[in-house]
Length: 592
Image 1 (cartoon, one colour):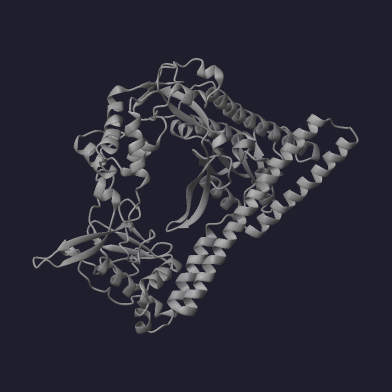
Image 2: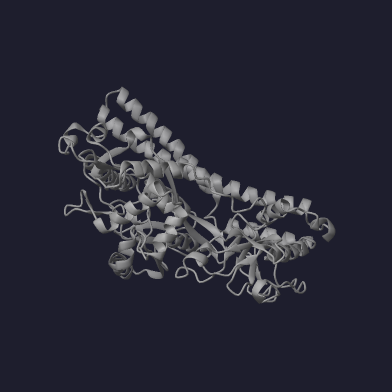
């Protein structure tokens, strides 16, 4: 690629990305990209400001730690060019190239790649655009070819091998079918016998397997009721007759089956999973979270694959399914409203939401009572995963947290500063100028409409054929979907900020400056709502100390006094473990 920078200091950012965790762990792809970029920068006389890497990041989204770092550096000014080895290292969607190019141009920065074939002339942009579309087309063909290959394989009666086969089976030598693993299948039969023939609950089944030292499907020690229920409801263990299977599969698949045998059914193409990565405000700045959404497809799209029978008697299976169908999960709240439920109270070691539980007791006089606790499920069940097995009494934690919050609610000025800081932190987690990005995407939509109209005119004049028209319209539709997806994401961010601002105004109008007596009259549901509006988070540690964070503490630096005293069972002290204002994060936190 030929440099197009004029005389003067030339400053460059080198950007490298790999798209899979395997590549990220091996590192060879990142190293090769950086080496090529360093050679280019030395050859062209660029001063390298920073080498930015995005290991294990997909190009399907712009929300990546490395790309956000690049955009921050460009926004700060003084960057001549951002260069990558290939154009698809920046993004896989041509629409994202368009957005980055416009954003960087506003700061006098070029977007460049070593595999570019054009220049900034209309002809050069056309050449690079064609290359982008060809790369996108090839990736789409690979994905589609893989998907159709898997569908064809399943319709031929073959298992599409994944990471791990169903428990009780192993893959055959060709990895396209199941073979019964007798040792593990005996455990499956034991489960069905206990539930279907002996009437044992799934909870008792799980505890029995743990006592017997039977490893769970992942090799761990603990079994869960949910896992036992999944076994019972999975058709891979249900014995099907030849006639039942033949009605589900293609005739050529049924012809290979033995009419005298029983078979299980392994289902393929049952659900669609979509994953995305988003940036959110966190205690230490911008954080990146992966979100996935699973949607089950219409049953008519499912593909049945016959597998060897499990050996579970039909009457056991039917009886076990009848048992689990009548299960109702009991409420863990015991008929009470827990102020810190809904993930407000979390384990300080593993970060998981603590579950509310009741413990009933009987005194020596025969009087019954109940004590309510928060506890970490992992710490009480899987100590190798989380060592926090200490419970926090709700009748101690609730007053202590509320005393802190109500004391801050009585200080309107400090509360407003904290709420404003929370909103600014959330706004700081967003990339660039949302209004400008929205305008750019709307302009992209308008350009798509213009191109579509032009293609239709060319087709009407028979300048392009029907197949070419269909291909071009499909490309435009993909661009439209990308733009609409980004516009929807920007709208979601705007709504989140508006919701934060509404919560701030509601807190300031309804609770700020209220006298302590009126605040103490609030019920558990109202206190819970206040906590949610303040984005409160309470972390519980093994020493039974609690760390509180949220907008209420964002305006640290003052010394508002001592923490409320309180003693937990076993001597755990709720008194201050850290002075207020010490160890404050982006939203602020304090330990008690």
